[in-house]
Image 1: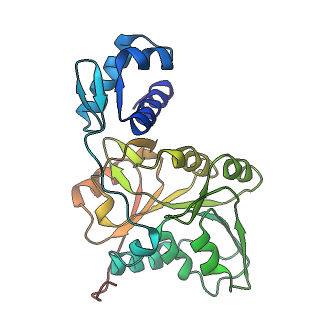
Image 2 (image 1 turned 180 degrees about the horizontal axis):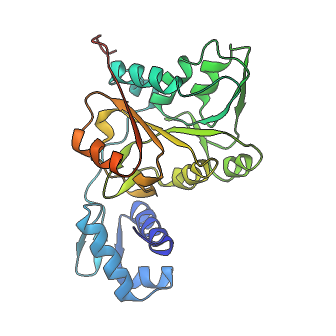
Length: 264
């Protein structure tokens, strides 16, 4: 498990690589305030993970990654799996509870299954989730402020993180774009990572909703170790070996049975 200092360096190195296209050990040593030996070791590890490509003390991103489709499009991708996950995950939320429901397409399906709940408080940084729950008279919806990420319709950044300090929740439920046993929960959108970590710290109970396509992927920024998850809600096509390993870590696994219906 990387130390916090090393994790912070990794994220800063990747942020610079995204901004400048290429990094070199000498300049990184100056910017990060550590030795060149430390920087070269960091670059080697990031290269071995496939996150950077490295040569002669320099490194760059491995090539242009395809941008994640906007959330409006992703709502229709793998729809039958997300519908099943949304229904199963919603059953974990009880009347009278206060929960944080994160951004993403799968969490929207969770919100759709909260209809009819009583005395529920939902805190969210997702405009989509807020809209889904707006007509539910017995659900109190708290939409956090912050910087709008247009493609995700999510709110992130300093204002969001400050707002999180003003609320308390029983459970945190989030989606995640990449889950790896070796590399943990990761995200390619670096500005969102600090917000993600602040959200995770809101409650000891972390429920992750993710369909089978998220497994085995590694994003460029570390969010949390897999062991931080208390419950994972996924579908019946998720990798069995990965799920078995997660059960060994004490994570509760719920596999929702997807109905055979056309996506879209």
